[in-house]
Length: 324
Image 1: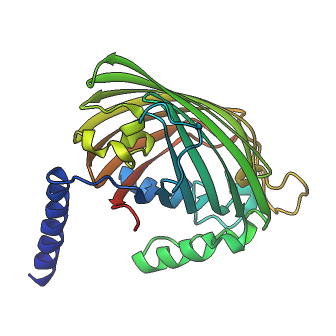
Image 2 (image 1 turned 135 degrees about the horizontal axis):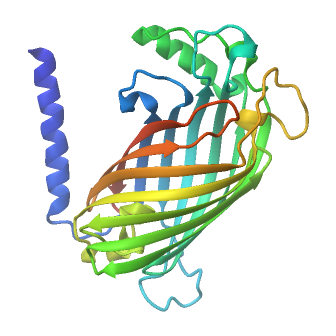
């Protein structure tokens, strides 16, 4: 009874916060905190493989001076700065195998921090660019986290972390261009995303197309582009939408599969597929101060000799009032 009571209180508080965001918000928000978890356990297939887990933390804010276009022409122009700290780790299909010859993917951890700047040049265009600095190997904390987590919840003990991708400090540069193509105003649109990453950890090019339908906002005022902070909050409409997307990725290097660009210190590496297909479907709901988003991801084979895989991402975004 005590547990049910506590859960009920938490649920009521969440509903109160969400409803409070629907009414009476006059000031705009200029900060946002986001936490996301990506894991194949949410697919309910009783699997733990390939992209095994990701914990992503973001803090986004508006710069104090937002005159990057000179004299701003209109309120559609906006700049958002995103600071990220995230951990991701990867494992073979079967965690109980001990022989390295039986692994179909290397054990690998990737812990990184980054900064990204999003420039909205109009209501339906965004240019995003930034960098990531991170590390693989034991310093990533992946081995320690997964070993502890599996012991805590009673999952099988992973046997192969002793053969993980070797520690290496790595830097990536990244850029993305997004454009919204309106089909039916506020109801149906297409969003195209072209992105590229160049670095010592990952080098790839990705082209995505997403179809969205529901109650929609322009790209520069949509949770789809993490753009629900800024001066246009007075024009905000609560929105709920579904989306489905397809993407194609050309990969030149992936440190979590191939190991270092500079040496062969990793005890186990594999060959990549240079082309990977992505499919996703999900939904998102936003009030002025809160967004909740859930996405199912399916990816074709990334490693030669391995299988395709899928996982679910769950994300909560909370926005805050302007800083004094």
